[in-house]
Length: 477
Ligand code: FAD
Ligand code: NAD
Image (cartoon, rainbow, N blue to C red; front, side, top):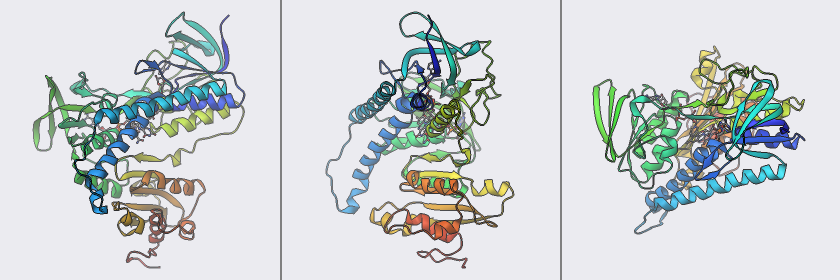
Protein backbone atom coordinates (compact mmCIF):
# COMPACT_ATOMS: atom_id res chain seq x y z
CA UNK A 1 0.00 0.00 0.00
CA UNK A 2 1.30 3.49 -0.80
CA UNK A 3 2.32 5.81 2.03
CA UNK A 4 0.16 8.82 2.77
CA UNK A 5 0.95 12.07 4.60
CA UNK A 6 -0.90 15.23 5.61
CA UNK A 7 1.98 17.14 4.04
CA UNK A 8 4.78 16.25 1.65
CA UNK A 9 7.47 18.90 1.28
CA UNK A 10 9.71 18.56 -1.78
CA UNK A 11 13.07 20.16 -0.92
CA UNK A 12 14.76 20.33 2.49
CA UNK A 13 16.33 23.81 2.31
CA UNK A 14 15.49 26.61 4.77
CA UNK A 15 12.03 27.04 3.26
CA UNK A 16 11.21 23.34 3.15
CA UNK A 17 12.67 22.23 6.47
CA UNK A 18 11.09 25.08 8.46
CA UNK A 19 7.70 24.38 6.85
CA UNK A 20 8.05 20.67 7.67
CA UNK A 21 8.97 21.29 11.31
CA UNK A 22 6.22 23.88 11.88
CA UNK A 23 3.60 21.63 10.25
CA UNK A 24 4.71 18.73 12.47
CA UNK A 25 4.50 21.00 15.53
CA UNK A 26 0.90 21.69 14.49
CA UNK A 27 0.14 17.96 14.52
CA UNK A 28 0.45 17.06 10.85
CA UNK A 29 1.99 13.82 9.59
CA UNK A 30 4.85 15.22 7.48
CA UNK A 31 7.43 13.90 5.01
CA UNK A 32 10.23 15.94 3.45
CA UNK A 33 11.87 14.66 0.28
CA UNK A 34 15.45 15.85 -0.24
CA UNK A 35 17.83 14.62 -2.91
CA UNK A 36 21.02 16.49 -2.01
CA UNK A 37 24.25 14.54 -1.50
CA UNK A 38 26.88 16.78 0.06
CA UNK A 39 30.48 15.53 0.35
CA UNK A 40 29.26 11.97 -0.20
CA UNK A 41 26.40 12.02 2.32
CA UNK A 42 22.66 12.76 2.03
CA UNK A 43 22.15 16.23 3.53
CA UNK A 44 19.31 18.47 4.62
CA UNK A 45 19.60 22.27 4.74
CA UNK A 46 19.52 23.03 1.01
CA UNK A 47 21.69 25.59 -0.72
CA UNK A 48 21.86 27.78 2.37
CA UNK A 49 23.45 25.35 4.80
CA UNK A 50 25.53 23.30 2.35
CA UNK A 51 26.80 25.65 -0.36
CA UNK A 52 25.41 29.10 0.45
CA UNK A 53 24.85 31.26 3.53
CA UNK A 54 26.71 29.17 6.08
CA UNK A 55 29.91 28.06 4.29
CA UNK A 56 30.33 31.55 2.80
CA UNK A 57 29.97 33.16 6.23
CA UNK A 58 32.37 30.63 7.78
CA UNK A 59 35.01 31.66 5.23
CA UNK A 60 34.14 35.35 5.58
CA UNK A 61 34.60 35.10 9.35
CA UNK A 62 37.90 33.17 9.16
CA UNK A 63 39.39 35.52 6.59
CA UNK A 64 38.15 38.61 8.45
CA UNK A 65 39.89 37.40 11.61
CA UNK A 66 43.10 36.79 9.64
CA UNK A 67 42.89 40.19 7.97
CA UNK A 68 42.35 41.94 11.31
CA UNK A 69 45.20 40.08 12.95
CA UNK A 70 47.54 40.81 10.05
CA UNK A 71 46.59 44.43 9.38
CA UNK A 72 44.50 45.96 12.18
CA UNK A 73 45.86 44.59 15.48
CA UNK A 74 49.10 46.60 15.38
CA UNK A 75 47.17 49.81 15.97
CA UNK A 76 45.85 48.29 19.21
CA UNK A 77 49.41 47.55 20.28
CA UNK A 78 49.18 43.86 19.47
CA UNK A 79 52.15 42.60 17.49
CA UNK A 80 52.15 39.23 15.79
CA UNK A 81 55.37 38.18 14.14
CA UNK A 82 55.32 35.67 11.30
CA UNK A 83 51.53 35.51 11.03
CA UNK A 84 50.30 33.01 8.45
CA UNK A 85 47.12 31.18 7.45
CA UNK A 86 46.26 27.71 6.28
CA UNK A 87 43.47 27.49 3.69
CA UNK A 88 42.98 23.77 4.24
CA UNK A 89 42.29 24.32 7.96
CA UNK A 90 39.87 27.14 7.12
CA UNK A 91 38.08 24.85 4.67
CA UNK A 92 37.98 21.97 7.17
CA UNK A 93 36.49 24.28 9.84
CA UNK A 94 33.87 25.46 7.34
CA UNK A 95 32.99 21.84 6.54
CA UNK A 96 32.64 21.06 10.26
CA UNK A 97 30.29 24.02 10.78
CA UNK A 98 28.20 22.91 7.79
CA UNK A 99 28.15 19.26 8.96
CA UNK A 100 27.07 20.24 12.48
CA UNK A 101 24.23 22.39 11.20
CA UNK A 102 22.91 19.98 8.56
CA UNK A 103 23.13 17.13 11.10
CA UNK A 104 21.19 19.37 13.47
CA UNK A 105 18.30 19.60 10.99
CA UNK A 106 18.21 15.81 10.73
CA UNK A 107 17.97 15.67 14.56
CA UNK A 108 15.18 18.28 14.53
CA UNK A 109 13.30 16.16 11.99
CA UNK A 110 13.64 13.13 14.24
CA UNK A 111 12.60 15.06 17.32
CA UNK A 112 9.52 16.48 15.59
CA UNK A 113 8.55 13.23 13.88
CA UNK A 114 9.18 14.49 10.33
CA UNK A 115 10.00 11.64 7.93
CA UNK A 116 13.03 12.43 5.76
CA UNK A 117 12.63 10.63 2.44
CA UNK A 118 16.09 10.55 0.81
CA UNK A 119 15.72 10.87 -2.94
CA UNK A 120 13.86 12.83 -5.59
CA UNK A 121 10.27 14.07 -5.54
CA UNK A 122 8.02 14.86 -8.47
CA UNK A 123 4.55 16.37 -8.30
CA UNK A 124 1.93 14.33 -10.14
CA UNK A 125 -1.70 15.23 -10.82
CA UNK A 126 -4.21 14.94 -7.95
CA UNK A 127 -1.75 15.88 -5.16
CA UNK A 128 0.22 12.69 -5.56
CA UNK A 129 3.99 12.72 -5.31
CA UNK A 130 6.33 10.31 -7.05
CA UNK A 131 9.28 9.49 -4.81
CA UNK A 132 12.45 8.01 -6.33
CA UNK A 133 14.71 6.93 -3.45
CA UNK A 134 18.51 6.78 -3.74
CA UNK A 135 18.07 3.03 -3.46
CA UNK A 136 14.97 0.90 -4.01
CA UNK A 137 11.78 1.14 -5.97
CA UNK A 138 9.91 4.27 -7.05
CA UNK A 139 6.72 4.84 -5.06
CA UNK A 140 3.71 7.11 -5.35
CA UNK A 141 2.74 8.92 -2.16
CA UNK A 142 -0.67 10.39 -1.37
CA UNK A 143 -0.48 13.87 0.09
CA UNK A 144 -3.29 16.02 1.48
CA UNK A 145 -1.01 19.03 0.99
CA UNK A 146 2.22 19.56 -0.93
CA UNK A 147 4.86 22.27 -0.62
CA UNK A 148 7.25 22.75 -3.50
CA UNK A 149 10.54 24.10 -2.08
CA UNK A 150 13.19 23.05 -4.56
CA UNK A 151 15.08 26.34 -4.50
CA UNK A 152 17.45 27.67 -7.11
CA UNK A 153 20.72 26.97 -8.89
CA UNK A 154 23.41 29.29 -10.31
CA UNK A 155 22.85 30.84 -13.72
CA UNK A 156 25.45 29.65 -16.24
CA UNK A 157 26.51 31.85 -19.14
CA UNK A 158 27.76 30.32 -22.40
CA UNK A 159 30.60 32.88 -22.68
CA UNK A 160 32.11 31.48 -19.48
CA UNK A 161 31.10 27.83 -19.21
CA UNK A 162 32.34 26.11 -16.03
CA UNK A 163 35.65 24.22 -16.38
CA UNK A 164 36.87 21.98 -13.49
CA UNK A 165 38.26 24.13 -10.69
CA UNK A 166 39.32 26.98 -13.00
CA UNK A 167 36.00 28.54 -14.06
CA UNK A 168 33.64 27.90 -11.17
CA UNK A 169 30.28 28.99 -9.78
CA UNK A 170 29.73 29.93 -6.12
CA UNK A 171 29.84 26.28 -5.06
CA UNK A 172 33.27 25.81 -6.63
CA UNK A 173 34.50 29.12 -5.22
CA UNK A 174 33.79 27.86 -1.69
CA UNK A 175 36.14 24.92 -2.24
CA UNK A 176 39.43 26.50 -3.38
CA UNK A 177 42.21 24.75 -1.48
CA UNK A 178 44.79 27.45 -2.24
CA UNK A 179 44.68 31.19 -2.88
CA UNK A 180 44.50 32.13 -6.55
CA UNK A 181 47.14 34.79 -7.29
CA UNK A 182 44.78 36.61 -9.62
CA UNK A 183 41.05 35.97 -9.38
CA UNK A 184 38.40 37.14 -11.85
CA UNK A 185 34.78 37.45 -10.74
CA UNK A 186 31.91 37.96 -13.19
CA UNK A 187 29.11 39.85 -11.45
CA UNK A 188 29.40 42.53 -8.74
CA UNK A 189 26.31 41.23 -6.94
CA UNK A 190 26.06 39.76 -3.46
CA UNK A 191 28.03 36.59 -4.20
CA UNK A 192 30.70 38.37 -6.23
CA UNK A 193 31.36 40.85 -3.42
CA UNK A 194 31.26 38.33 -0.57
CA UNK A 195 33.41 35.66 -2.20
CA UNK A 196 35.63 38.29 -3.83
CA UNK A 197 36.24 39.64 -0.30
CA UNK A 198 37.12 36.19 1.06
CA UNK A 199 39.93 35.63 -1.43
CA UNK A 200 41.03 39.28 -1.52
CA UNK A 201 41.66 39.14 2.24
CA UNK A 202 43.98 36.18 1.73
CA UNK A 203 46.01 38.05 -0.88
CA UNK A 204 44.32 37.37 -4.21
CA UNK A 205 44.32 40.23 -6.67
CA UNK A 206 40.57 40.34 -7.36
CA UNK A 207 39.03 41.90 -10.47
CA UNK A 208 35.23 42.08 -10.56
CA UNK A 209 33.64 42.48 -13.99
CA UNK A 210 30.10 43.85 -13.83
CA UNK A 211 27.95 44.21 -16.95
CA UNK A 212 25.77 47.01 -15.59
CA UNK A 213 27.06 50.59 -15.31
CA UNK A 214 25.70 51.14 -11.80
CA UNK A 215 27.14 49.57 -8.62
CA UNK A 216 24.61 47.76 -6.37
CA UNK A 217 21.63 49.42 -8.09
CA UNK A 218 19.14 47.89 -5.62
CA UNK A 219 20.78 49.67 -2.66
CA UNK A 220 20.23 53.26 -1.60
CA UNK A 221 22.54 55.39 -3.77
CA UNK A 222 24.46 56.88 -0.83
CA UNK A 223 25.22 53.42 0.54
CA UNK A 224 26.20 52.02 -2.86
CA UNK A 225 28.59 54.95 -3.41
CA UNK A 226 30.25 54.45 -0.03
CA UNK A 227 30.43 50.67 -0.57
CA UNK A 228 32.18 51.12 -3.90
CA UNK A 229 34.71 53.45 -2.27
CA UNK A 230 35.39 51.26 0.78
CA UNK A 231 35.58 47.94 -1.11
CA UNK A 232 37.79 49.58 -3.74
CA UNK A 233 40.18 50.72 -0.98
CA UNK A 234 40.33 47.15 0.29
CA UNK A 235 41.65 46.10 -3.12
CA UNK A 236 38.56 44.86 -4.98
CA UNK A 237 39.09 46.13 -8.52
CA UNK A 238 35.45 46.64 -9.54
CA UNK A 239 34.99 47.40 -13.24
CA UNK A 240 31.49 48.52 -14.16
CA UNK A 241 29.95 48.35 -17.64
CA UNK A 242 32.24 45.38 -18.41
CA UNK A 243 30.55 42.75 -20.57
CA UNK A 244 32.38 39.42 -20.74
CA UNK A 245 32.49 38.04 -24.29
CA UNK A 246 34.58 34.91 -23.79
CA UNK A 247 36.74 32.85 -21.43
CA UNK A 248 39.31 30.31 -22.56
CA UNK A 249 41.06 27.89 -20.26
CA UNK A 250 44.62 26.83 -21.02
CA UNK A 251 46.21 24.59 -18.41
CA UNK A 252 45.50 26.18 -15.02
CA UNK A 253 44.80 29.70 -16.29
CA UNK A 254 41.89 31.42 -17.94
CA UNK A 255 41.94 34.27 -20.44
CA UNK A 256 38.87 36.46 -20.16
CA UNK A 257 37.75 38.75 -22.95
CA UNK A 258 35.47 41.64 -22.12
CA UNK A 259 34.19 44.86 -23.61
CA UNK A 260 33.61 48.19 -21.91
CA UNK A 261 33.29 51.84 -22.94
CA UNK A 262 37.02 51.91 -23.75
CA UNK A 263 36.82 48.95 -26.15
CA UNK A 264 37.84 45.28 -26.08
CA UNK A 265 40.13 43.86 -23.40
CA UNK A 266 41.82 40.57 -22.58
CA UNK A 267 43.08 39.57 -19.13
CA UNK A 268 44.66 36.45 -17.65
CA UNK A 269 43.42 34.98 -14.35
CA UNK A 270 44.29 31.91 -12.28
CA UNK A 271 40.63 31.30 -11.52
CA UNK A 272 37.31 32.78 -12.56
CA UNK A 273 34.11 32.84 -10.48
CA UNK A 274 30.82 33.20 -12.37
CA UNK A 275 28.31 34.92 -10.05
CA UNK A 276 25.64 36.37 -12.34
CA UNK A 277 22.51 35.37 -10.43
CA UNK A 278 20.46 32.27 -9.71
CA UNK A 279 17.42 30.73 -11.36
CA UNK A 280 14.50 28.73 -9.94
CA UNK A 281 15.09 24.98 -10.04
CA UNK A 282 12.21 22.95 -11.45
CA UNK A 283 14.04 20.23 -13.41
CA UNK A 284 12.14 16.94 -13.10
CA UNK A 285 9.81 18.43 -10.48
CA UNK A 286 6.54 18.80 -12.33
CA UNK A 287 4.65 16.10 -14.26
CA UNK A 288 3.20 17.49 -17.49
CA UNK A 289 -0.36 17.12 -16.15
CA UNK A 290 0.25 18.33 -12.56
CA UNK A 291 -1.47 21.65 -13.24
CA UNK A 292 1.23 24.01 -11.91
CA UNK A 293 1.82 27.18 -13.90
CA UNK A 294 5.16 28.95 -14.20
CA UNK A 295 5.55 32.68 -14.75
CA UNK A 296 7.48 34.28 -17.62
CA UNK A 297 10.78 33.97 -15.68
CA UNK A 298 10.15 30.24 -14.96
CA UNK A 299 9.31 30.82 -11.27
CA UNK A 300 6.37 28.78 -9.97
CA UNK A 301 3.42 31.16 -10.07
CA UNK A 302 1.92 31.80 -6.62
CA UNK A 303 -0.41 34.29 -4.97
CA UNK A 304 0.56 36.53 -2.03
CA UNK A 305 0.30 33.55 0.33
CA UNK A 306 2.26 31.07 -1.78
CA UNK A 307 -0.75 29.16 -3.18
CA UNK A 308 -0.05 27.70 -6.62
CA UNK A 309 -2.64 27.17 -9.34
CA UNK A 310 -3.43 23.73 -7.80
CA UNK A 311 -5.52 23.72 -4.58
CA UNK A 312 -3.53 22.26 -1.67
CA UNK A 313 -0.20 22.75 -3.44
CA UNK A 314 2.02 25.63 -2.27
CA UNK A 315 5.41 26.86 -3.44
CA UNK A 316 7.95 28.85 -1.42
CA UNK A 317 11.46 30.25 -1.28
CA UNK A 318 13.79 30.74 -4.23
CA UNK A 319 11.34 28.84 -6.43
CA UNK A 320 8.88 31.75 -6.34
CA UNK A 321 8.89 35.54 -6.86
CA UNK A 322 10.65 37.85 -4.43
CA UNK A 323 14.21 38.09 -3.14
CA UNK A 324 16.25 34.86 -3.11
CA UNK A 325 16.99 34.91 0.59
CA UNK A 326 16.98 32.19 3.22
CA UNK A 327 14.94 34.19 5.74
CA UNK A 328 12.30 34.97 3.11
CA UNK A 329 12.08 31.24 2.29
CA UNK A 330 11.80 30.36 6.00
CA UNK A 331 9.01 32.84 6.67
CA UNK A 332 7.07 31.64 3.64
CA UNK A 333 7.46 28.05 4.88
CA UNK A 334 6.11 28.95 8.31
CA UNK A 335 3.26 30.98 6.81
CA UNK A 336 2.15 28.11 4.58
CA UNK A 337 2.27 25.61 7.46
CA UNK A 338 -0.03 27.90 9.45
CA UNK A 339 -2.40 28.51 6.55
CA UNK A 340 -2.90 24.82 5.83
CA UNK A 341 -3.92 24.41 9.46
CA UNK A 342 -6.58 27.08 9.16
CA UNK A 343 -4.60 29.85 10.86
CA UNK A 344 -4.19 33.40 9.64
CA UNK A 345 -0.64 34.12 8.55
CA UNK A 346 1.21 36.36 6.16
CA UNK A 347 4.68 37.50 5.22
CA UNK A 348 5.31 41.24 5.17
CA UNK A 349 7.33 41.51 1.96
CA UNK A 350 7.90 45.22 2.64
CA UNK A 351 10.20 44.49 5.58
CA UNK A 352 12.46 41.78 4.21
CA UNK A 353 16.01 42.69 5.19
CA UNK A 354 18.93 42.55 2.76
CA UNK A 355 22.48 42.06 4.03
CA UNK A 356 25.77 41.84 2.18
CA UNK A 357 28.31 40.32 4.54
CA UNK A 358 31.38 42.21 3.38
CA UNK A 359 33.34 44.25 5.90
CA UNK A 360 31.87 46.69 6.61
CA UNK A 361 28.51 45.01 6.19
CA UNK A 362 25.84 46.55 3.99
CA UNK A 363 22.24 46.18 5.16
CA UNK A 364 18.89 47.65 4.40
CA UNK A 365 15.17 47.38 4.99
CA UNK A 366 12.25 49.24 3.45
CA UNK A 367 12.36 51.85 0.72
CA UNK A 368 15.42 53.61 -0.68
CA UNK A 369 15.27 57.39 -1.06
CA UNK A 370 14.87 57.09 -4.85
CA UNK A 371 12.20 54.40 -4.53
CA UNK A 372 10.11 56.51 -2.16
CA UNK A 373 10.47 59.56 -4.40
CA UNK A 374 9.49 57.57 -7.49
CA UNK A 375 6.32 56.57 -5.64
CA UNK A 376 5.48 60.26 -5.28
CA UNK A 377 6.25 60.43 -1.57
CA UNK A 378 7.69 63.65 -0.19
CA UNK A 379 10.78 62.39 1.55
CA UNK A 380 13.05 63.55 4.37
CA UNK A 381 16.31 61.79 5.22
CA UNK A 382 18.91 61.70 7.96
CA UNK A 383 22.38 60.22 7.93
CA UNK A 384 24.99 59.73 10.63
CA UNK A 385 28.54 58.43 10.36
CA UNK A 386 30.25 55.78 12.50
CA UNK A 387 33.39 57.95 12.27
CA UNK A 388 32.24 60.02 15.28
CA UNK A 389 30.80 57.15 17.29
CA UNK A 390 32.80 56.43 20.44
CA UNK A 391 32.40 52.67 20.31
CA UNK A 392 33.31 52.43 16.62
CA UNK A 393 36.43 54.54 17.24
CA UNK A 394 37.37 52.49 20.30
CA UNK A 395 37.19 49.39 18.10
CA UNK A 396 39.05 51.11 15.24
CA UNK A 397 36.18 50.07 12.99
CA UNK A 398 34.42 53.25 11.95
CA UNK A 399 33.72 53.23 8.20
CA UNK A 400 30.19 53.95 6.96
CA UNK A 401 26.94 55.41 8.22
CA UNK A 402 23.27 54.83 9.01
CA UNK A 403 20.66 56.54 6.81
CA UNK A 404 16.94 56.89 7.43
CA UNK A 405 14.32 57.63 4.80
CA UNK A 406 11.03 58.97 6.14
CA UNK A 407 7.77 60.48 4.93
CA UNK A 408 8.15 64.27 5.24
CA UNK A 409 4.41 64.76 5.77
CA UNK A 410 3.66 62.04 8.32
CA UNK A 411 7.12 61.47 9.89
CA UNK A 412 6.60 57.75 9.29
CA UNK A 413 9.77 55.73 8.80
CA UNK A 414 10.06 54.25 5.29
CA UNK A 415 13.52 52.75 5.13
CA UNK A 416 16.84 52.20 6.90
CA UNK A 417 20.12 51.81 5.03
CA UNK A 418 23.43 51.02 6.66
CA UNK A 419 27.00 50.46 5.69
CA UNK A 420 29.13 49.90 8.75
CA UNK A 421 30.26 47.54 11.48
CA UNK A 422 27.50 45.21 12.61
CA UNK A 423 25.06 46.56 9.98
CA UNK A 424 23.44 43.14 9.48
CA UNK A 425 22.38 43.03 13.13
CA UNK A 426 21.68 46.74 13.58
CA UNK A 427 19.27 46.81 10.63
CA UNK A 428 16.82 44.72 12.67
CA UNK A 429 16.09 47.87 14.68
CA UNK A 430 14.79 49.38 11.44
CA UNK A 431 12.82 46.25 10.57
CA UNK A 432 11.08 46.20 13.96
CA UNK A 433 10.40 49.94 13.69
CA UNK A 434 8.84 49.52 10.24
CA UNK A 435 6.74 46.57 11.43
CA UNK A 436 5.35 48.70 14.26
CA UNK A 437 4.76 51.68 11.97
CA UNK A 438 7.23 53.82 13.93
CA UNK A 439 7.78 57.50 13.25
CA UNK A 440 11.20 59.11 13.24
CA UNK A 441 10.19 60.87 16.44
CA UNK A 442 9.62 57.49 18.12
CA UNK A 443 13.28 56.62 17.52
CA UNK A 444 14.41 60.10 18.51
CA UNK A 445 12.68 59.74 21.90
CA UNK A 446 14.20 56.37 22.77
CA UNK A 447 17.28 55.94 24.97
CA UNK A 448 20.16 54.08 23.34
CA UNK A 449 22.90 52.64 25.55
CA UNK A 450 26.26 54.39 25.58
CA UNK A 451 28.76 53.56 24.22
CA UNK A 452 27.26 51.34 21.50
CA UNK A 453 27.27 51.26 17.71
CA UNK A 454 23.48 51.58 17.92
CA UNK A 455 23.88 55.18 19.04
CA UNK A 456 24.48 55.90 15.35
CA UNK A 457 20.88 54.75 14.77
CA UNK A 458 19.68 57.28 17.34
CA UNK A 459 21.81 60.08 15.87
CA UNK A 460 20.67 59.24 12.31
CA UNK A 461 17.05 59.52 13.47
CA UNK A 462 17.83 62.85 15.19
CA UNK A 463 19.61 64.09 12.08
CA UNK A 464 16.43 63.67 10.01
CA UNK A 465 15.28 66.84 11.79
CA UNK A 466 18.70 68.46 12.08
CA UNK A 467 18.98 67.50 15.76
CA UNK A 468 21.99 65.16 15.84
CA UNK A 469 24.28 66.11 18.70
CA UNK A 470 27.67 64.77 17.70
CA UNK A 471 27.77 66.53 14.33
CA UNK A 472 27.16 70.11 13.36
CA UNK A 473 23.81 70.09 11.59
CA UNK A 474 23.00 72.37 8.72
CA UNK A 475 19.24 72.08 9.09
CA UNK A 476 18.06 73.02 12.57
CA UNK A 477 14.76 72.56 14.33
P1 FAD B 1 17.27 25.74 -1.33
O1 FAD B 1 18.04 26.13 -0.14
O2 FAD B 1 17.91 25.87 -2.66
O3 FAD B 1 16.84 24.23 -1.08
C1 FAD B 1 16.16 23.49 -2.03
C2 FAD B 1 16.50 22.02 -1.85
O4 FAD B 1 15.63 21.26 -2.67
C3 FAD B 1 17.92 21.67 -2.31
O5 FAD B 1 18.66 21.10 -1.24
C4 FAD B 1 17.72 20.65 -3.43
O6 FAD B 1 18.65 19.57 -3.38
C5 FAD B 1 16.32 20.12 -3.14
N1 FAD B 1 15.64 19.64 -4.34
C6 FAD B 1 15.54 20.25 -5.55
N2 FAD B 1 14.75 19.53 -6.38
C7 FAD B 1 14.37 18.43 -5.67
C8 FAD B 1 13.54 17.32 -5.98
N3 FAD B 1 12.92 17.20 -7.15
N4 FAD B 1 13.38 16.37 -5.02
C9 FAD B 1 13.98 16.48 -3.80
N5 FAD B 1 14.75 17.52 -3.47
C10 FAD B 1 14.93 18.49 -4.38
N6 FAD B 1 20.62 33.93 1.66
C11 FAD B 1 20.57 34.64 2.79
O7 FAD B 1 19.47 34.98 3.24
N7 FAD B 1 21.69 35.00 3.46
C12 FAD B 1 22.92 34.68 3.02
O8 FAD B 1 23.91 35.02 3.64
C13 FAD B 1 23.02 33.94 1.81
N8 FAD B 1 24.22 33.59 1.33
C14 FAD B 1 24.29 32.85 0.19
C15 FAD B 1 25.55 32.52 -0.30
C16 FAD B 1 25.67 31.79 -1.45
C17 FAD B 1 27.04 31.44 -1.98
C18 FAD B 1 24.50 31.35 -2.13
C19 FAD B 1 24.61 30.51 -3.36
C20 FAD B 1 23.24 31.67 -1.65
C21 FAD B 1 23.13 32.44 -0.49
N9 FAD B 1 21.90 32.82 0.02
C22 FAD B 1 21.82 33.57 1.15
C23 FAD B 1 20.63 32.44 -0.64
C24 FAD B 1 19.99 31.24 0.09
O9 FAD B 1 20.90 30.16 0.10
C25 FAD B 1 18.70 30.84 -0.59
O10 FAD B 1 17.87 31.98 -0.70
C26 FAD B 1 17.97 29.78 0.20
O11 FAD B 1 18.78 28.63 0.35
C27 FAD B 1 16.66 29.38 -0.49
O12 FAD B 1 16.03 28.41 0.26
P2 FAD B 1 15.01 27.37 -0.40
O13 FAD B 1 14.54 26.51 0.70
O14 FAD B 1 14.03 28.08 -1.23
O15 FAD B 1 15.89 26.51 -1.44
P1 NAD C 1 22.99 39.02 -7.95
O1 NAD C 1 21.74 39.16 -8.70
O2 NAD C 1 23.12 39.57 -6.59
O3 NAD C 1 24.21 39.65 -8.79
C1 NAD C 1 24.52 39.25 -10.08
C2 NAD C 1 25.29 40.38 -10.74
O4 NAD C 1 25.81 39.89 -11.95
C3 NAD C 1 24.42 41.58 -11.07
O5 NAD C 1 25.04 42.75 -10.61
C4 NAD C 1 24.31 41.53 -12.59
O6 NAD C 1 24.19 42.79 -13.17
C5 NAD C 1 25.63 40.88 -12.95
N1 NAD C 1 25.64 40.19 -14.23
C6 NAD C 1 24.66 39.43 -14.78
N2 NAD C 1 25.06 38.92 -15.97
C7 NAD C 1 26.32 39.37 -16.17
C8 NAD C 1 27.29 39.18 -17.19
N3 NAD C 1 27.03 38.42 -18.25
N4 NAD C 1 28.50 39.79 -17.06
C9 NAD C 1 28.79 40.55 -15.98
N5 NAD C 1 27.90 40.76 -14.98
C10 NAD C 1 26.70 40.17 -15.06
O7 NAD C 1 23.30 37.45 -7.98
P2 NAD C 1 24.39 36.59 -7.21
O8 NAD C 1 25.43 37.44 -6.61
O9 NAD C 1 24.78 35.51 -8.17
O10 NAD C 1 23.53 35.95 -6.06
C11 NAD C 1 22.38 35.12 -6.37
C12 NAD C 1 21.34 35.20 -5.30
O11 NAD C 1 21.81 34.62 -4.10
C13 NAD C 1 20.97 36.63 -5.01
O12 NAD C 1 19.64 36.81 -5.41
C14 NAD C 1 21.09 36.79 -3.54
O13 NAD C 1 19.90 37.24 -2.98
C15 NAD C 1 21.42 35.41 -3.01
N6 NAD C 1 22.54 35.58 -2.08
C16 NAD C 1 22.31 36.29 -0.94
C17 NAD C 1 23.35 36.55 -0.08
C18 NAD C 1 23.09 37.35 1.15
O14 NAD C 1 21.94 37.49 1.53
N7 NAD C 1 24.11 37.88 1.80
C19 NAD C 1 24.63 36.09 -0.36
C20 NAD C 1 24.82 35.39 -1.54
C21 NAD C 1 23.75 35.14 -2.38
